[in-house]
Image (cartoon, rainbow, N blue to C red; front, side, top):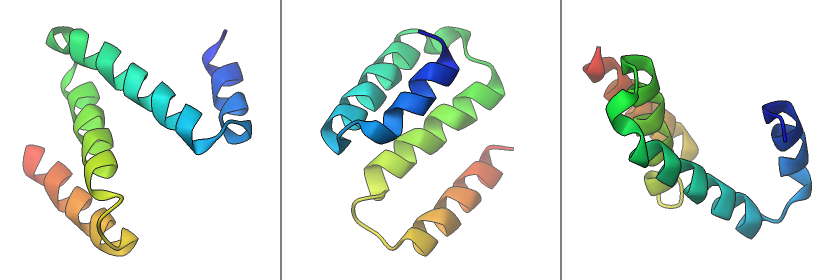
Length: 74
């Protein structure tokens, strides 16, 4: 299955299935993290932060936090 097909299929899946896919994808990234570029590492950290704080804080606050966190990595 191509990336485009996967992305197109996501909206039709349940939240539970989407979370399973996201978790599996992150696990694969973690297994290969030694080969990640700096940009890929930033993306991974961003996804982890969104996952971790997305359920607990206001979206505007989460965006501000992530913007600050990503800026600190530069």
